[in-house]
Image 1 (cartoon, one colour):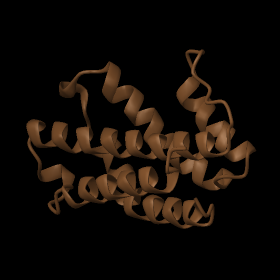
Image 2: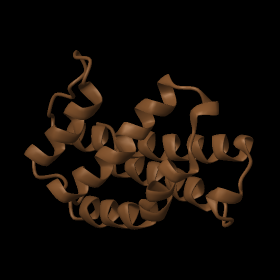
Image 3: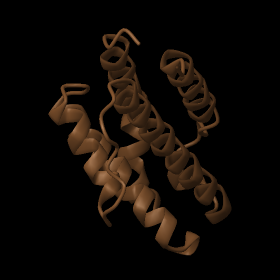
Image 4: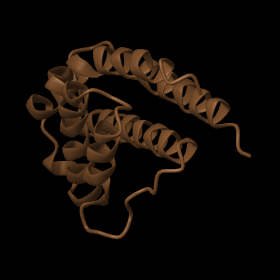
Amino acid sequence: MPDYGLRIEAEFEAIERTLAALPERPLMDLSELELAGVAALLHNFYNGVENILKQILASRNIAIPQNSPSWHRDILLKVVEEGCISSSLAEELRLFLAFRHFFTHGYAMDLSANRMLPLTDQIHTVFTQLKEQIDKQNL
């Protein structure tokens, strides 16, 4: 049987390294290339979160939604439905999911510091909330 707790801890560590790589300079002062780097970190953050959510579902033997165009959103809905995270946290995470979708399907030249700023401002708080809610799962 997989050790879901170890897998989740590894994801937490990867997310912490991702957050540590975010620049301390204001986003408005960054070049296009640096903004693209920040966007990649935001993308990585949500991918790590989603990996954690999938591990929680797997640990509970709950099927992971994957067969629809909206399966990323469906995972968020499922973890709320199953009581794994709060609906308020899921709403915060939905913003990161939307950015992940934009980043995956868009162009780096279309990135906007103004659109990314709310995410970088909230990322540490959202991560702390996620850790607190996941730690209560006793995996």
